[in-house]
Length: 281
Image (cartoon, rainbow, N blue to C red; front, side, top):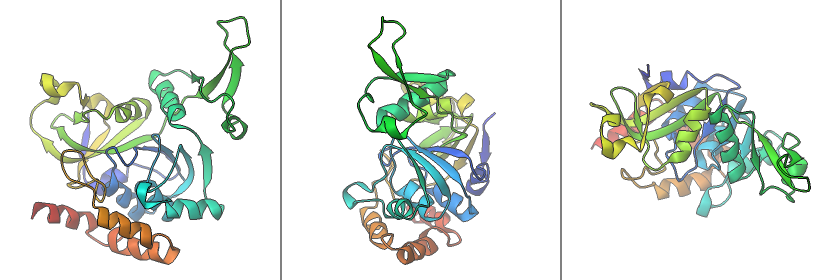
């Protein structure tokens, strides 16, 4: 049965050293949960971005929560490089497992299917094979040879973590078209979700909503977190706070600026409660 928790108790389900899958900035990003993880002082997380990341990963890295990251890219998009990610890489404080968007999706699909690996062709000839010794190249066993293919080990995160517009009282979560979140939940050992609201009823009983709903079977715990994706947007609910994101990019360019940003917007008591209160006004 899906548990309903407070935001801080939800964050408390994640342990030091856990492998945590996070969605990209264009999806349903759990920013309130990320801030809660930083406040907890988590360390040595193994982050898997599905398939890339932005401010959420940058904040976790800048706060010293992340030991390794498997990713296709980490950036702030039109605002430029992710500054704390870049600083951690240059300073040797972060191990990177270079990947690609198709490779991450394929490895998670292996995880959700319970198979040990997934074959993928498009990596042949790239430098990635040199830096990923865990990716093995074999000859296609269904031919007479001369047909190489790459085998990707399955990804089985300890936790899939994301935000969503709403869930129902049974723990079913509406995700709409965000199918990468479904794959994350299927592959992960636990799925922790923050939502804007919990609604009465049963989403799976509604033919118009069921196809976009993640069944409670795959949801370990929920927490209500109004405006839980802020300063990123949530499709159909609110737009990204572009001024805030630009301010983050400017301040996070230095360690001192990042520390000041976190003191104001991450560590301050009642940070996420204040965000929710502003939304209600």
